Image 1 (cartoon, rainbow, N blue to C red):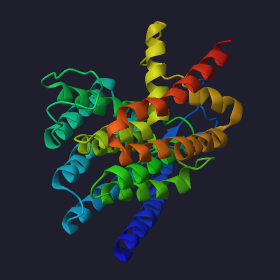
Image 2: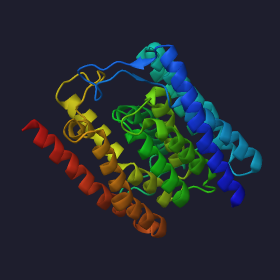
Image 3: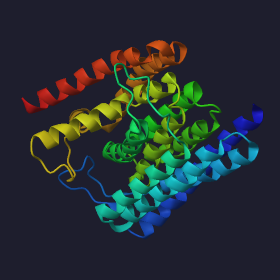
Image 4: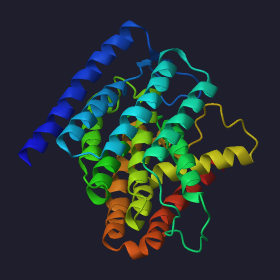
Length: 330
């Protein structure tokens, strides 16, 4: 136990140090996020800081595998698909990359993970869903692609995506992942980055970090999808991000807006314009800890009722999103 505690501490310190070096590099190379009318910040800020925890997480995955604390398939997913997602994100942070290339890389990474961590032949944990051959494979392939992109959509204010990733990896790893070491290590790495990203952020996560973090959480979800607790538990922990990203995208498509363009119409961005970054980030942390974590714990203890527990957990999050959007439109 002491040894693993030292590993987690080293991961945190290493990420803290590497992120500082990356910040110096991005400032020297002028890799900055310049504010515009759709931004939630007002000062040019270095971006690409997520590369720090990407490097440390991938390195740590190899160490855990050598120690026998990480399955080979999960390590291969982290280091293969995760590295690809991070690479195209870094190129995008440096100077912009065409969407088609980023999306193709996301598809390839998702296909890689699904081929390694083969989903169950069917998903018997969705009430009233008939058996459809191949449904689980298609479902998780699309889910991973959406996880990568939705996490990038939700990385718009200081500290939010980092704290979300840290809490989800820590709680989800402890409750659902066996062994939990890969998720706990990722949580420690992200915590090291958050020292630099807490409002007011001195460096942004960037697409390199947000895409990788979404992919890693998605892979953890996929790895535990053969149990009702794992299948429903991770989405419950991700409820705030899932609801805001998914519902906002659907609403923009319904309104005929160009959903590919950047915008400030997510619920968290609307509230941040009034409350500020710190309060919104703290509010999401409180929701995760006080509301969602207990329900995820209930799912781990009583998996028979996992689907209905998830519905109860999601209901007020959806209502809150509707209230914010209605008040903003009024």
